[in-house]
Image (cartoon, rainbow, N blue to C red):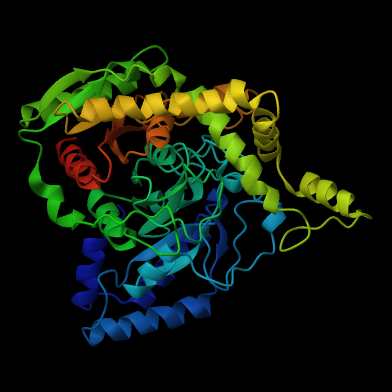
Length: 474
């Protein structure tokens, strides 16, 4: 069983282990399980050893930060200074970042150790981790199945004990979906809670960095450290960050927990529904009041999401033009050919599909029919969540995914079927609310089932509190 950070921290304080020994152990696990393809880049062994020795020295002198000895895998969309950051794409294959993302600075300031860059769907576009230019990531529970995407590498690193925790990113469920598929905990924070500075942009009004852990406590601690205002990110919110780890043990007695009826309809696997209903019963027995609620505009979520994110992607990915820091075609002879051939050679199929969709919905004659209408639908979806939480509801419970992890190749020939994997996650990204996916059982094939706790804006504490209760009860 994977060790959680509180156990590791105690071992370090009691001199039962060292950071150097921890790093060596994780590196051995990465090597033993390299067929899972969880990492694009594992950092230099000597560099990691030097960093581990620095943290060990601080622990011995009792001057270490609160994350001393925490080993972190980082999604390759988040930049780390002097390390390769590809975003899972050939177009950034040789890009070395000259700076750290804000979340990396905050982790290292508290003496966490970054072990490497995790594999991902190219530019975070995918639900299965079958879109990486560096090969598929495999689910460690059943390697014939997908781990979920796009943060599949980050989640597999945690699930397979290649790191203590990890950072992923969320645009439409890219932390919660793989967390559900691999049986770990993953948070999509409130939009603006965690700085996006240093995160490769896919859809800027949706993207958020999300922490991943083997339990709720580790995930809460990680959030506590990396969250908060950042002057370098204009979308970062000036909202105080509470001590999340102090609040997770409050229990659920007296809470009103809403169950959105729209999340329990056609398409939901019966075994998943049964597992989630069982968790609800246990919460009810523990003192929570379970209330049926409605989010009437849920059905418009997938269409709204894929119009808006492809539009933003077509704009954000225009910067990869073959001129500056990206792949440049050797066959191009003119500026125009450089743009076209460089992008055609280095972008994958899914990225090209989304760029074309986004360009289409933003084009003259179609903007009003698609993009503007989707923005109006986004307002209605957000209003659904505002209305529910204004009616004395503390949080919502819903499935994370309509199915457990599916087999490789099962949905790749049908993009719409793949997009529908996100049916229970995208509306939360549209609305900007926080949501935490927590394991709540397994199906008859021994595959993990995830339940998500959705809270009002900036109430991640409620997500962790209820998630911790589910963790203990289930």
